[in-house]
Length: 351
Image (cartoon, rainbow, N blue to C red; front, side):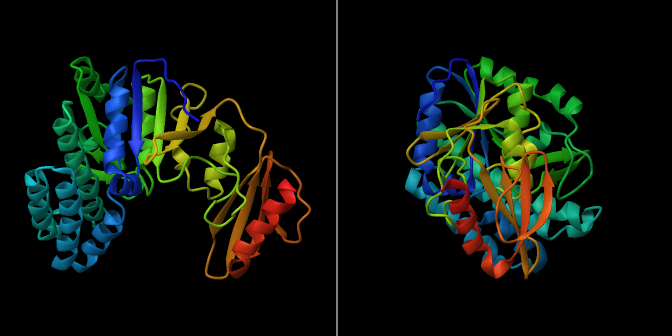
């Protein structure tokens, strides 16, 4: 399913897996959108890089830096991209690792180290756009997204952030494509992060403040399914889902969209989820829903998990009710039985 966008301004976010595995397709999509739209790009770190950087904050292990360098070098060589900016950033990373004591606390140090993942991917992407004839501009969201000092899961200061988006508007007026680090923000002179998966949140914050027509969330899956398609083979793609449904499903554990991503655009701007490698769009999040329940799950501990169902109030299922709310219900199950229970519940609901 392809949705035609009729407005001039679009924010498109690419996840880490889709950048690494479908880099060329991601660049091609931006080129296509740029033909008739003002485009703002938000990027995650390459797949696995954030975890590697997190390990680095404890170990300071040089081989980890070498692995990160190789991952970016491989992508750069494959795409004919200059590596100079990557080398500069990696040298800066080494310097930061030697100066942990200059940070106010461990969490502030960790957030600064984690920022290198998105900064590296942004530099590669900007160079790829330039090679394709489009003037991209690397933007560090440290300078745009202002937050409190909740390092690791910072709260966004929308009024301060709104004052800074003029930088992006000016670039758009010059027919440039701002390419922005997702997941990151800034508090005073320190870098902060918005929680894992926070690049979705960055995209909808900017979509709202820039009054975009739509926010596109591109990844390695086509959209939102009635259950995790990696676990439930009969899961069905939802063509439509409402803001409320997706927000609830995200809070109950659905991974397709960060749970804070809905609030900035709710009731105003649609979010469209799609798959990067074939440039297809699958789920439109707006005021409309498809009338299909959504199953989500969370791991509680090594023994227990929860399965939430959005869009129903009652389900005949042999498991303890854990929580319930308006138009959703949540069951408690043994972790070892999670996959079987997900499949069984999906079959009960969609029989």
